[in-house]
Length: 175
Figure 1 (cartoon, helix red, strand yellow):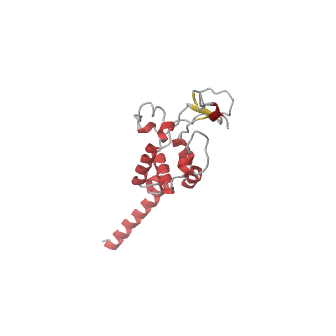
Figure 2 (cartoon, one colour; figure 1 turned 45 degrees about the horizontal axis):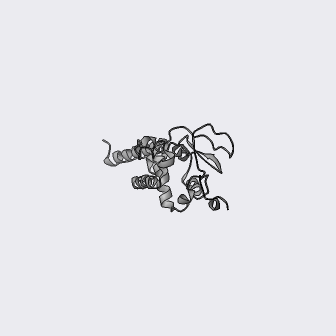
Figure 3 (cartoon, one colour; figure 1 turned 135 degrees about the horizontal axis):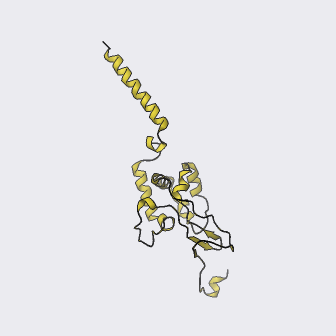
């Protein structure tokens, strides 16, 4: 007859072995190294109130936010044109798939191309920036990359919105 100690040892050994195998094959998010559910919920809230979907989700402003969540933050092929050239709202889900937390914190505090209000990200605390990071990553990568930025005075092959003021009084138009 096998002693109870041997049975417990065998069970413990199998549990450790199973845990080791699962941790080796499971994605990092599945074993708890990513984020808590509270952080993801906070990130979703921040993405909503900060207006991330307004530019990075096709049709979001036009439908008063009635875009299915699985289509959020996949970028838009409508550019924004100004003195900087023409830029496109990035597919954040693809962008964040290849970004670690430290890279995101550094990027969020660095200047970005207009009209991205990067200074709003710069002023967020690390906890809020990481909540955004975890939320966007929780959506999973999907979609296609957006067109690359176009330099000023170069032809643009996609639709775009002009960011040039019209009908300014003369004194406002000159420095």
